[in-house]
Length: 616
Image 1 (cartoon, rainbow, N blue to C red):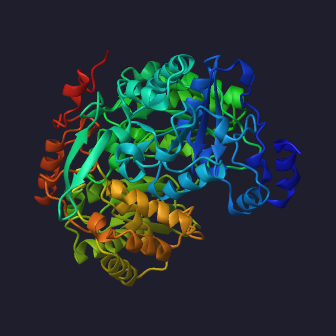
Image 2 (cartoon, rainbow, N blue to C red):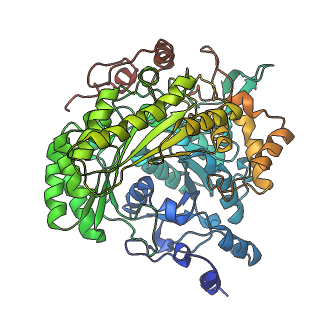
Image 3 (cartoon, helix red, strand yellow):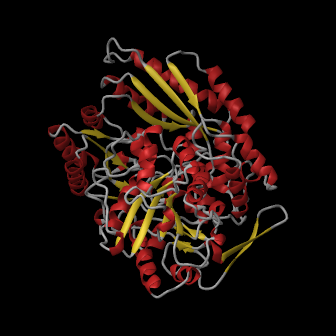
């Protein structure tokens, strides 16, 4: 029985069998005998989540535009299908060809969140590929590579990957495949290829970098072998308005998390919120013109048949031509009966004119992110949002017919006090009172204020990378304090599992010594750690203990400014001096203007060789 027949035989026994068979509209098949390089794009989570990822859509189409390269998709199987795969010796395969991953030149993972790390090992093992890079031999095949936001600190994964793509992938991925194609035809081995690959800007090969540690566990120094660069500089796309964007998406047979077309309208962020990793690692700020956004939206909707399109960005309302862009899009989407989704709206740029546009495309509640419960704490994190702006935004929303508002906050932020926690409940109560005092509020509707509280996780390349995470006990005390302070049943509170947040912090700030911890946790059965039904913190604690690693060392300890971080050899353009300066400013309860108001000197301009907001 061939692999396809074997797969189809067992699909009736699993939930959502359409996840595992491919053949969707828009998927690309090629004759593998006529392709020079095969790339398996792997998302270390389920099909439903991975198929919603815009980065996969871009790189899938980009690679497949090259006639002699073939990119296919692969996702982590759910537990029911994995059990069948292991029992029936079905290897993990790519959806387009149904070929096992061990037949591919590249096995590429996108690392979007730290709690997917064990899934990488599980997927490699399901494919019959050794999980440690050192065990995969010198034959030039099965190059395991990763990109995405988590590889700004790839060290906890360093032993499992041959290389990492640092920064934006639209250009560097094709350069990498071209080099591979050339060297494969020359009969090169894997090490020869890796030695050449490090000459491509944005490629990091961990085997060429060695770390030594001090007695206290901190990094003592790093040495570099051969011609690998001392600092690996991230790749960026300079002309974002003309960057490649697909004119078609693969349209799933089954429902996925974000089942719609997506158009990226800007990259980067002007705000400088001190906790936000994405706001720093995606600098410089770049945006597409309204004409480009409109044309990409139109062609995607026409080619996919989607009746909903989302504008993707870190802060959509910070687009310098937001009104013009929305006018174009709303005229088109209204006429074609297409829903337009506008996530990432900022409190301080929300106006009555923007509300009128939003009302045409969004019927549900509005979501905003004050992050801190008091003005002092919002100044510490550089949110640059006042309570007056928050209340004014809610008033505009209530007068505009909305009766549901969701507010995002964080617990455990640097310098946070109990008064800041109580301030969250107080702010929610004042918004509730505002609703009832608003004469033009919706009649006959019950108001709902939802508070969602994430736990602060210090992340690399942010001004708060030096900060400790609050301990599990302290976070749980703060959660209880917040619940006790909320007095109205119309205010709903939700918060994150403190154990999950602790593990996220450890993996985000960890070094190469955590590779064995991750491996040990996976061998104990850890996988899908971001899913509450699978997460097993006790097994992780066992893994830390058996490997002689202390989670508190990585998560709950303040780092000194002169300490060598595990990611010190990676250059994400923002300078460490700037991060230190911003950290000190935070502890003075002071804000920094956003990038449009005044350049804060983060270092990006000098390294890129252009102003962030120049017109060329």
